Length: 325
Figure 1: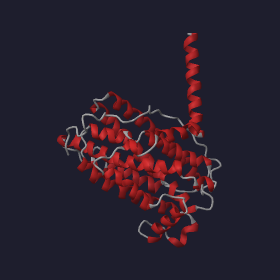
Figure 2: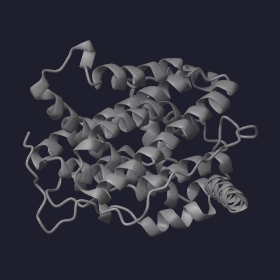
Figure 3: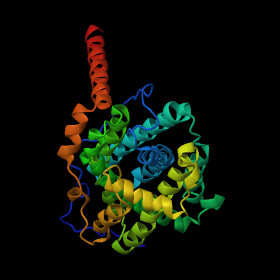
Figure 4: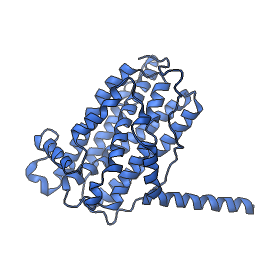
């Protein structure tokens, strides 16, 4: 894996076109039903699983990006990475709260799925994988490889964020507004910072060949973990007892596609198709989503707008106190 800069001299290190700020959101789960999409238990459980997939991975993103910060020589990109870390940390906290205050309170055990994610990110993809200390000459290579994996994952989160913001079938089905706001707030911020992971990977010397095989690893990993975790959630629901949900049973995959045809989930074929641009040598994350669409949603998001109002009030209070002193 090469460590020389691979980006063209004319390409700026940062393609992020907005300031990345942390919105300190809070979601209230008291009235959200387990079937947050009415009469759609499969889709509801399938998307509920993201609350178990995301926290461990997003905290891992933050740890790696903090390790990468001293290596960044472009000030704009450094600020982008700091904003990315703050947003990802808030995403992890938001979904962790959903596990504790929503899923666990409704009788869904999350321990098994959380343990799998913790093992992946804290053992397999740790600084010392499986407890084995890396040779000094391998440390930066291992860091860059994992940053490339994050870049591949972040392309997927941008794709899913765009789907969440544009899928009006959930609204037509009268989906729970709190859960919708959670995934749309998160999706909008994924679109907002969609260029950061790729820019950082390029800046530190990530090359196309490595990006190609990392994508080939990331896509089946995401899909496999998602389906396996969702199957475990469904096993806890008596309505699916006769189906014996499992990542290895054809029903699980066929039902995913059937549910996608109703407009309640992105289809597996769509996820694969939408991954194709990342395989291109000319891939540009800035072309994969709309910052304007993301920020338009964030302005009206109940949780994000409430967080902004609170932050504004705190700043005004501090300003008044400073004047008084």
